[in-house]
Image (cartoon, rainbow, N blue to C red):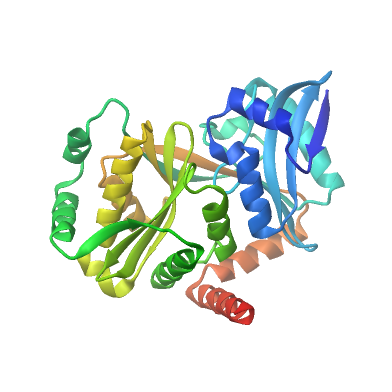
Length: 338
């Protein structure tokens, strides 16, 4: 048995993914989105025996020389293939990580439901919200919305709000401003650079992604990015203007996106993961008639000193002061490119 490291997925990679996964985030197309967005190293690991691929783990290298992380993957990654080989795979993975001087391995795998499946890893539990669309009519989906949500949508429909697809890279920039506004309002860390949304627009729209606006008097007041796997529509991210929240543009925007996912024949609408401490976000996702399931985020630190320092820096970045500094640096960087 052997571990192969691919710095660029080949035709055999996509054939393997097609057999074992229905997530677009495992494909070479998503590799290209991340590679061109972040400019980071991509490492796609393959566990094989005599030329036969048994299991695989796609990932990206993030961080710097001081603290390097192998992260599988934005937003979901994890193991592909025969899961019975994961214990053997992990032994090879640990040896490879030490050789490459990686300080942390991080894995988000939607198919792992028990902490014990990765016994040497720490685990952070979160929720993933899924709205079932298969075998349901649009009326049945509407019926499962909470009453308060139905009222909000009816209120939004009576206003001058209207729904429109994003049609240019310039409009992606307008969406990003809404995203930054939401991060500022929620005192949250800006996780994604504008390059990521631009590459989603360039490489995935219209077949594998839609980008939407909710507009009011010809002005974008809310936006959303949805990415499509074979069976699912994934809500990737969104943003909204604080001064127009009273019009309920987000509720109407999600309602339209869910209807489009249903029209495309998707089996479910995926609201993605939520930290269990973010109660307001969890309540927002609950009101659509979703099912909660556990989403486990695994990480393993290699070494002691550098991982400890990284935790301190990360904790500072997640404070309101740290988030403000991070947003300011992002704005300066954006201004320097203008």
